[in-house]
Image 1 (cartoon, rainbow, N blue to C red):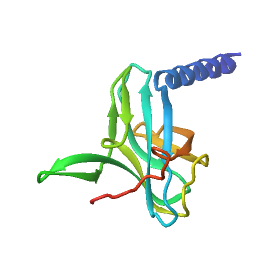
Image 2: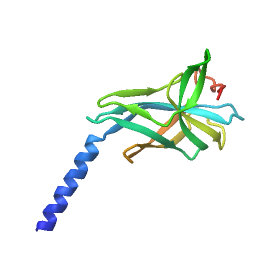
Image 3: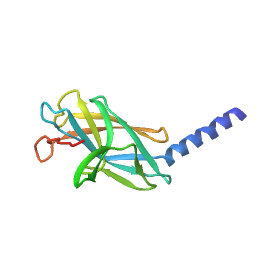
Image 4: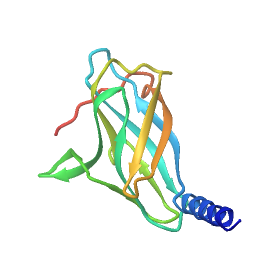
Length: 151
């Protein structure tokens, strides 16, 4: 009986920890590419519904050789894209991963990304928690996006 009670308490603690670290993904999409493009990007709303800050530290997908977190910065009078180690999301806040800002960079694509295709992702947080989701591929303004990045 004592062992069952201990297991019940442990289970409740785990569930409450998961509820506190609740991160949700909304409005995710991946840019469609022209036939020979090597890179694309994914965008989304990262919502932290917990009372603790969280940090996104990685992303993965099987559609590309490399998947990295990136941001656009102003450097030497030019807008440049740079890899970042983490994206902080404060308690009860939403961070937008969007064109011209934070985004998930897909490099070394295994093939073109076509509208209405779906892409599987897993995000990894500093706590070790992971969140998996599926994002549709969308063309921007009815045309595949032209990816012109200066690294």
